[in-house]
Length: 196
Image 1 (tube, rainbow, N blue to C red):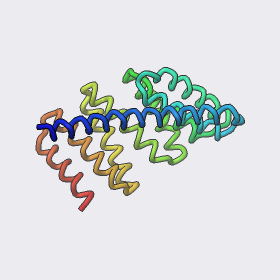
Image 2: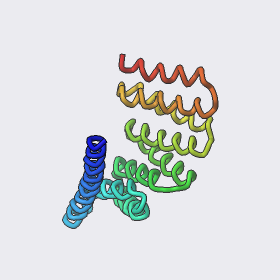
Image 3: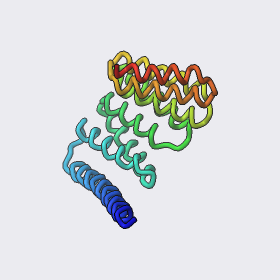
Image 4: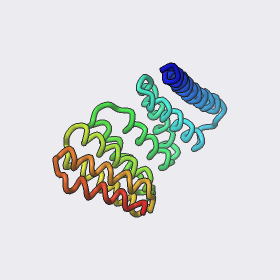
């Protein structure tokens, strides 16, 4: 019993320190990006830094509003510079950062539109996933499935095994929510086939 209690205590201490180290690491990255911003000119590097900072803030639920504001700054500068890749990433960050389905979809669609123009399949893949996830969360299963299937085709064209497996699992989740068990099984099997 004492051994179990000691192991449990050690595990709890390890988890607490790991979480603390991760939070501190994120804070250091944010501080570094802020320092870099102070010295950068109004160029594409500044857009990239703003997008990186925006993403860091958006991924923390407590600072999403700040992240969206920084994404707006990145988008404005990227637009002035006609830096399409920077616009794509800023719209992607905004799609992540908003809480309403309408705002998420609007910004994801803007990112997708520019991504198609510059043939950036990576951000198209990410944005279709954002849309699919939020449609699924809102129980709009046909739209969720449609967007996951588009992301699956993008994953197939890139040849990325992890993306292929991931998309098949996401598609299985849609089928599970709708009670289509044969398609759930088929999607799980497709995910496993990726690694054979």
